[in-house]
Image 1 (cartoon, rainbow, N blue to C red):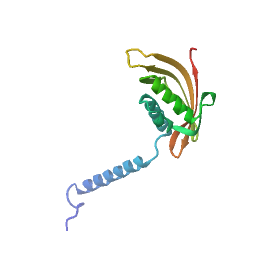
Image 2 (cartoon, rainbow, N blue to C red):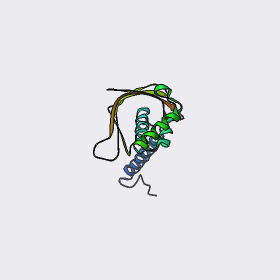
Image 3 (cartoon, rainbow, N blue to C red):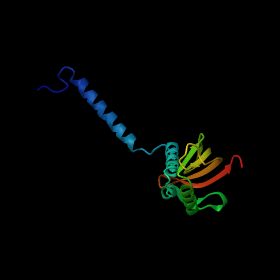
Image 4 (cartoon, helix red, strand yellow):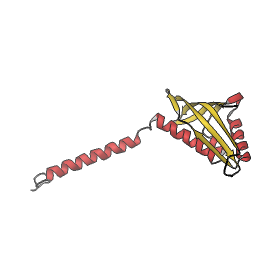
Length: 157
């Protein structure tokens, strides 16, 4: 009786098939692993920035921790109202950030950056622009990074 191994090259085909199955299994297991905390934090940061630029205060608020605190005691609802005010005031909104400086801890992180906040009525030049030094605190809640605190200081008053 002729088997796969007894045919010329059959042993190599079986070994190649076993190797391909092992690689496929490893790839599937790798896909199930948790994302890199830094990459996940950078993604959460980018999503938050995108909600601001989409002019969506309610979506922005979903990225904030329930106990969010900002400058002068600004809470989560106050942050949403501030974002809504900016949306009403400016037809175009943009946030440009400098390089993010991350400090990751177990379940928490600090992200520092410089931000240029621009708002306008849709013309060629922005009606308003301001540069800030920003320090944010993030907390990992149920596998998702949430903004827990933010402190911003104008670079030039």
